Image (cartoon, rainbow, N blue to C red; front, top):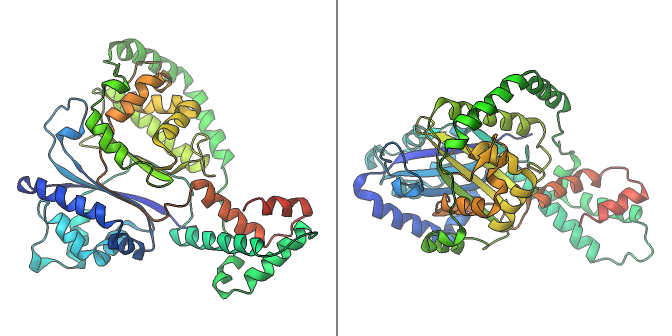
Amino acid sequence: MVKQTPLTLLTPVREDSYEKLNEILEKFKVGLHENLNARFNQLGTLHFARWFILSQDSFRDKTELPIPVRLVFSSNFDGDEEEHAKALVTVFPEYFDELYDCCEGYPAPQDRNTESRKNYLMQWRINTTAFYPGAPGRSLKQITQENELKNFIENFVKQNNWNGTSAKDIHKSILAAVDNRAEFEWSKTKATIPKKNWLNIALLFIVLILLSPVIIIWLLILHFFHERRDENSLVKRSELNDDLVARLEEDEDLFNQNQFTQVLVVKPGIMRLVTLHAFMTFTRVLVANLFVEGKLMGIPTIHFARWVLFDNNKHMMFFSNYDGSWQQYLGDFIDKSGWGLTAIFSNTKVFPKTNFLLTGGAYDEEHFLAWSRGTQVLTQVWYSAYHHLSIKNIVNNTFIRNELRANLSEKQAQLFLKRF
């Protein structure tokens, strides 16, 4: 199985280059619909990427210190970070030179080479606090190949008359047709599909039971000495900045997939910081052991999600790439995992009112949706390697690959054919 990796770069922008950088990013955004998209595709390992400018204006809530202007780059890719950064500056040297020449300390023209460019990028890398891959272990190459296999089989089935033919015999005919094509030789190897690790999940809940007295006391202290004193978000959708919302909506629903970027201020105090880190740890354990089959908290639409704490844990960014509309995406979260959203995001400033960390908050749908829009920032450049594929498609295509060579009964063969 291939390791899917997140990378986040937070690079300071030169004071005299802010406007120029905005213009370059706008040019790149347009270029994604032309030749730049093809250049991204050349990497062969990049699932998603985005750039945006982070500044004081990006934060809805008051920050303790002035925020310097920084260029944020985020990517989801296969393999090693160093190799990924090297590949980026190898395939896009002129693009990275144009962008990062607006940033502090970028190598002078005479000093620019693959190694110096890569080293410059990696010095601005920041750690990922928690990371969720929707199709763990699947490389971009595997996703692409399995989709090509699915399309071939689908066309083969449509182009033939199967009247009176059993599903089992159709399955055998499909296998023969696939084996007759050299480009599908790879399909003879069964794909590894991650499985839930129930032993680790059981151990986690044993630990939680043992710690329950401490957790209960912690929640009581948090509620009576923090939650009841917090400033809560009471803003409604109609009270948001219409211009910002309109700009965000311009870039949505252009494809079946969308992206979401949030910038938040963490509530001050050791209680909030410890609580946030505890839930991030809980999230990492669940992602590694339970949410491995294409669903996060029962939500089957998320390709990748990531939480990043930065500026000495004072601020947080949240990135996600998902299927469907913004409203549907957040509605699913509220319905299926409102408690999880509340547990994490209630540790950031001016969140809808919560009680004991797990109730209220995201379940206050009107104020939560307005809070989500109000803390969302404009992603200026966004790339997806497979706009046309949903997480359901990707997971289904792997099952098609594995069931193709299985000895299926008539009923199983019927279910196999329903995958198309």
